[in-house]
Amino acid sequence: MSILQVLHFPDPRLRKKAPDVRTFDAALRQLAADMLETMYAERGIGLAATQLGQPLRVIVLDVAEGGNAPQVFVNPVITATGGEFKPGQEGCLSVPGYFDIVERHESIRFRWQDLDGVVHEQDADGLLAICVQHEIDHLDGRLFIDYLSPLKRQRLRKKAEKQEKLSIPAL
Ligand code: ZN
Image (tube, rainbow, N blue to C red; front, side, top):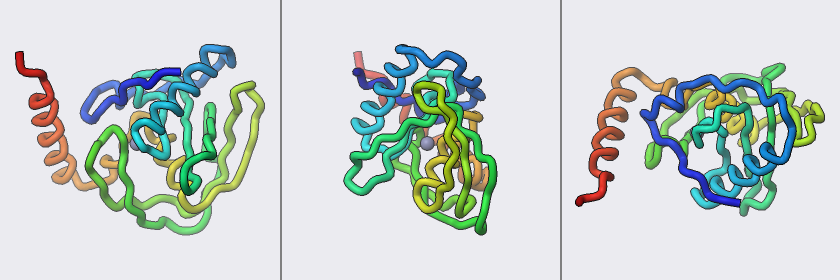
């Protein structure tokens, strides 16, 4: 397994819509394993393949307290939503150090495939529902900061670009 580099906003690769996974093979297993290792190394609770520059509909999550319940969802699709829109605080490994309030569906039903291609459907609420919505957004090229006002997003972009410049090693 290896830890991969997480892309940071405003990297244009984060804006690409990923196609469905069609081949359930060893390479897919390897990608899922690398995604989980990267997510744990970065202390995240969710990660989408697109955040690693891998254009495939794969997300990994671990919403268990203490974090030892890894989950892999391939080709996840929300099939129903319930409850109300509920505000909650979110952050993102691709927008480091920034947190803000986003409204999400309180509960969802979603369909996904496992690493063998077997189709599953389940209901989710709470943190799992929030994370699945956040990660599916990534697969569609959307970031949680897209829900913020244009002014807030503009400020974030400026800050992010400044940080990129500062991170160039001095030679
Ligand atoms: Zn994210």
